[in-house]
Image (tube, rainbow, N blue to C red; front, side, top):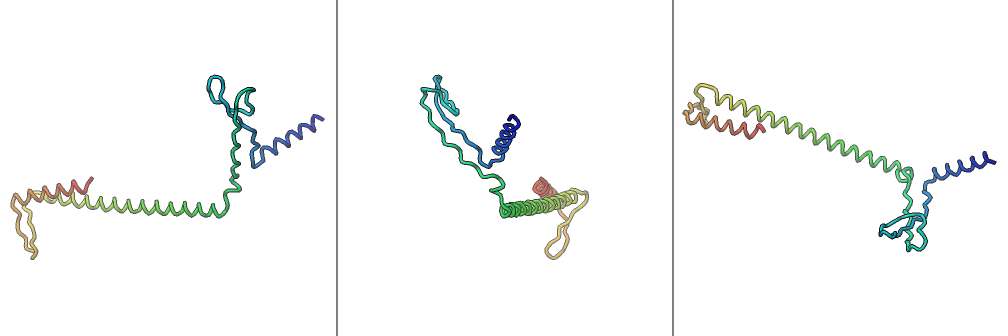
Length: 151
């Protein structure tokens, strides 16, 4: 008899564990003598208690996720990956352009600060030597460009 009861108890336990819907007990809410809200399966005698509604059973993952939903989620994931990769590539290109502009500005500053007389070309391609004030302005312009381009 004991072996039979153990197998029935084991089968019932297995049935409850594998059940997609939990077995819900009735739950009551009441306020005790100290004014604290209490919850339980049965209220104490002489206390006004209200029965709470049982929560709706949730669908199991096997029921809610279908191959179509998986396919949709996979497509969304791939789209986000492509967007992220595109954004990273654009940011890398922008950094590379910025680095090139900075390098050109520094090179121009080194040339403007180099010793010797510097010249300017007019629209006909003729060269005229710069005055000392003109060279000082060119150095300041080159420094300003380095400050703008090399942040």
